[in-house]
Length: 362
Image (cartoon, rainbow, N blue to C red; front, side):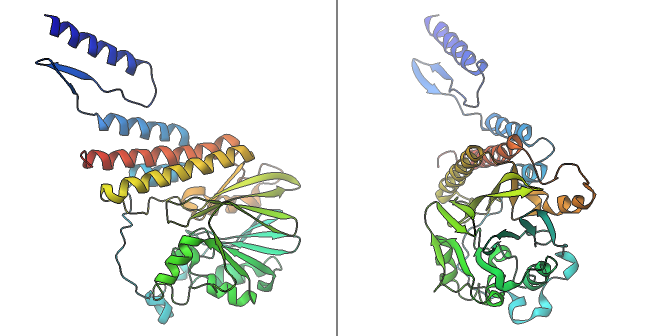
């Protein structure tokens, strides 16, 4: 009878903890022959709670991010050890059809211009002393989207002083060599670990390699200043070891806004087994929290990314011509920007829990 009473008290105490709300789940201890043993962890309940939190934060504005991170299987970025040149580098006829990646360039703020494609984004930030290009797309699309796209606004490639790369994947760094050569020497800014990744894979990055002699290797938070404009560079490792995110100011008919630029959102790191998957998830989540804090502290009201899947950039640029005197569709608001990073954190946590569930003993 005494053991039964203790068991009931333990269960009631645990139920009281759970009723108090919160994301953490308190373990239930069951009495069996006098020995206390923890009950099995309810991973499904924890995963569902994280997904529900992400869904609430997403609302209607961040559904692309929610779907990609929470409900589509994570992409396993396990290193293959291969170093192979993409077919389109040596044979341009093997590049994807223009209809699959083209989008019109657009001025989105007084000093910011979209020069990306229908899937992968690139941006030009105008300063008082030249241009800063953020990301460069694929090698096969850089001339059309960036070099030709910028001419629409009267820009010359030689006005580009810096090319800032969010991370060293071909859809963002691939066009850097094309643009750097056209600019006659723009300096390339990239995370140090991603510089090393490029150097270690000369075939993979053939025709897509920035000049390391003038390159800037980022290892800590940095401020890049040009012509009265400051680009705050925040290391956010996770998507790749050298991923960078950014904060900078734009104006909309003279009204200032701070942009938070997410440099790597997809769960593209190795995540098929606990080692190194769990550590990779923790690094990614820590970086998302770092950027959330930085964006919130800076009062960011605009969320941009390097994929339209995550920020709806292409759709929003198409809405601009009809805005009239209405709000700029690219202005999210402070709460929405913070919620973007809440979605990222909660979805990554759900995926991390899924890996723990699959390998409960590590």
